[in-house]
Length: 67
Ligand SMILES: [Zn+2]
Ligand SMILES: [Zn+2]
Image 1 (cartoon, rainbow, N blue to C red):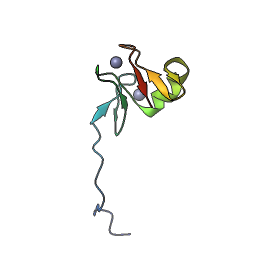
Image 2: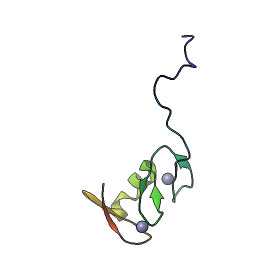
Image 3: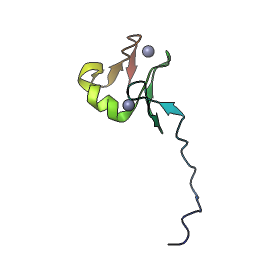
Image 4: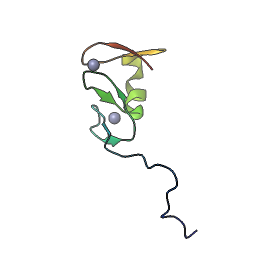
């Protein structure tokens, strides 16, 4: 394997999202228009508190969003 430097696929930019819970840069976070962002890891941990099946509730502004 000498071809590791070629990236034929588009690189996902870390830093596009910063989780509001763990403060880490993530390739993806669930996000709310108010600015709250939560990464999949934190989402799983807090699922019992913020998610109700197909929706989740932003802990900052209490907006209900679809997953
Ligand atoms: Zn997180
Ligand atoms: Zn919000």
